[in-house]
Length: 254
Image (spheres, one colour):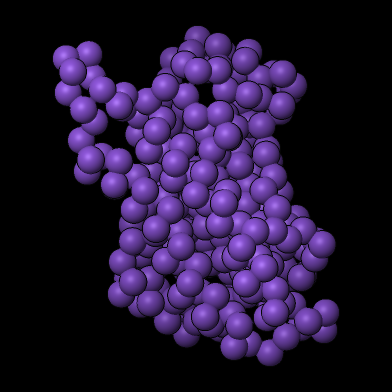
């Protein structure tokens, strides 16, 4: 699918990997809707790229439906969905004092990263499958964001790894389910990227993290994630796949 002129949705688009993805899609000619709970940052980015910013809580069906309706009114029906919204968190299963991890801490991360992403997919896909197919029979492309933690979860990452592992496991059945409509589904599993979260760490900590990556020995650049996300849209043979983008990194236990 060519990006030029297509309407695209980017969740978590106000910052980090989502913001860079929104920039790259706009650079290649897409009409981008930045969906985020942070409207101040979202509106600033929308002004920068000539898109629109919409408040969207992916865990709320009403919020997603309202955002989809507003995006459609502004840009027309979206054939591209970039699911980048997500949250982190690390907590041991049993604390040093013997206290078990609060169930709500586990539930919150699963609810945002896994259930929220699925909520976005189901509602956006319902609109995609009703569109007229393009010349190659394609109707839409959905890209999800997992993590290498889905495969190499570290101590304390039970909730985060489970949420991202769920997205990995969703990818193929979603692609098979939507194949009849010409909608592709691909997941990217990034490693250590220089996002706002890592930017806050001391330089020596950043250097230590970078040294753990086989090659290139540096933190990933958000634009590298964005370039891959955009390429997924334009390469029709990419479907049902999970792509690790990690410089051959394998996370140690801790």
